[in-house]
Length: 589
Image (cartoon, rainbow, N blue to C red):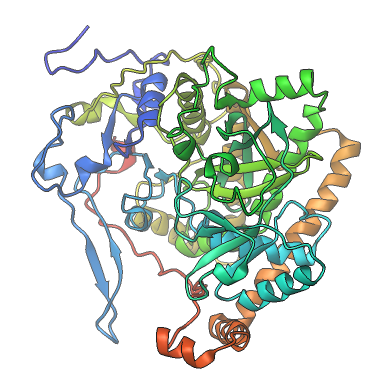
């Protein structure tokens, strides 16, 4: 049935409490629309409705009232220099409790404007993991410190800083007659764009910023085709780390039968690359449900069933190895993620304001050793095939359920309500029982604004100055216990599996925990050395190293001028300031 306004009839709240999370999201995320309708979160707004528009209105979207969609950034200027030090976006009416953005939205502004009870799907500091350049640098650091633990990292060089190391390695292998195949990826590329291969380092542009890796020349094959696996991981808490992996994924196949790389076939990308956006353009591409062949995209369940039945592979051990490398990849950047989160939200005591769903691209060699190729911050949520419709609707719905955002009284937001409408309607296969949180709280106590939180802290300090730190610690521990207990209750209703904190048999858990603790400690030592050295000395050292190895310095200077090696800035994020006070408290919503 349809209402007069053209939207679907509002489904009834199965809990009967009249409270649901309010969500704003990117209009491009079709899977989010499916997930919200499946979870019956009918009160939501799109981010595009809250940002300035150029006058064009989508006829399929009912726009918010004008006074609610105005974008009002506020800048705080330094008293010394007079320059703006931060900008805080503000909506006049912000009832939302969870926000889903992608790279095209103003992620930094949303992070800087978060309130204590709101959540966003972007974790600060995770750029150290999802950018090809930073991923290669960080994993290489840990691989040098712990080569036995980090044996899943292909040899990686980040240009131009590692040109000297790359040329030294290539010359040594060339003298032995074992010149490897190199795959070159642009730093900011996506969907396989700009990737090419070579056996001659002389063809690589020294001045451009790109990532060079050794090509995996002996991949594991299915029906003679190369493939990789997209595995979804979810981080729900940054301090301390709380990590989940989804028990379903996608296997993406190359559309040409694989032949070992040689000078004659280096340009045959349909054979060497497994990116779906590239292979779908090939005439030999077949959908996952095609009757003419095995298909170019499988589910992870179908892949493991085939490997177990036809190739006699122990997929249980393989899955454990994949979970282990996902955890160790996060550990390599966890000190940076934790410190940036605490700098951005110094007053938050719940640790769960930011979450993020990322996609790991994992490939197997002929010996079934798993390698991490890339980590995608915005895994594709498009629904091009039936497999995408089934999988991506499930993974986004389970993510939103496990994140567990704060609810809002629907009666207070009726006139601002928007319906989640989609043609890919899905029923919830595992609805929550209404009495799941009957005896335990679902959310830790929180505050509507940062001013309220500061006021509560001041009152506690005035009551007992000596016991103030103990009160802070007790509040943080209680909030963490409530949030983690709620996640443990929600996990059985999803396909997520917790991989940290570790779970398992006591005899195996002790050994695994010792290995993980070593990785955490080594990661802290590595990042402490990076922060101690600082950005400028490292930049000068690396710049001098590759510059001195360049055979013709004068020609390089005349063609490029003064060049500075791009280094990541480890400076602290700007401090948060108090948001506008004219916001309706969450208790009144």
